[in-house]
Image 1 (tube, helix red, strand yellow):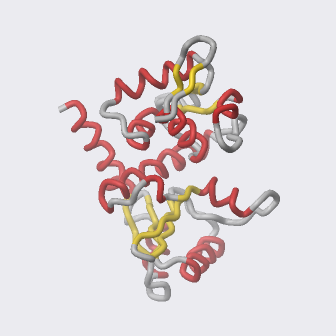
Image 2 (cartoon, one colour; image 1 turned 90 degrees about the vertical axis):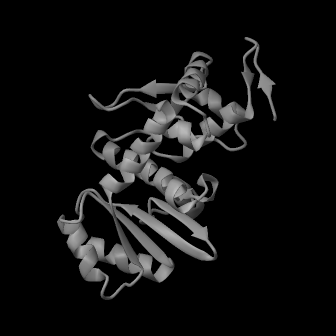
Length: 225
């Protein structure tokens, strides 16, 4: 394991670098997400390490919404130990926060139910970086490839304009082998539009948010059982 220490004697291990990388590639990330993404055996061990990284100035924790657990962000100091520059000033929109939390929940769900490795997932942030500076177009929340089949994942909690929504569905059909849509529930208009479009675009798969989040809750219960 590659380790490095600073003048205070704090030793930065490879898992700390992984924490910083995971914070960097998700728009919003909570402690329970970091526990799963970085392979901690329990939440207490994860929280202890996060507190230490805060103390030595690599990360910070911010409270954005009342009643919602705080999120973690990198500081400028994280740049010094990364092989690429991390975004220490990326803003978080309160109105999009629940969507962004659901995206990471979906990643954990896919890892647990389909065996998709976290390192094999490319996030929306990473997709935009691959597009290059100045290029701005729609990108899915997640993309991954298994057995030469590429799947995109879209978390859709609020309905877009119908034309834009259907254009995204059509574009995903032309680019990806499968498109998974996570919706609030199957009775919403979002789900109805997706079901209608299944007639033309056979690669659509629909998941309810509750199913995704129940899987995450189950893993938390197992930790303390």
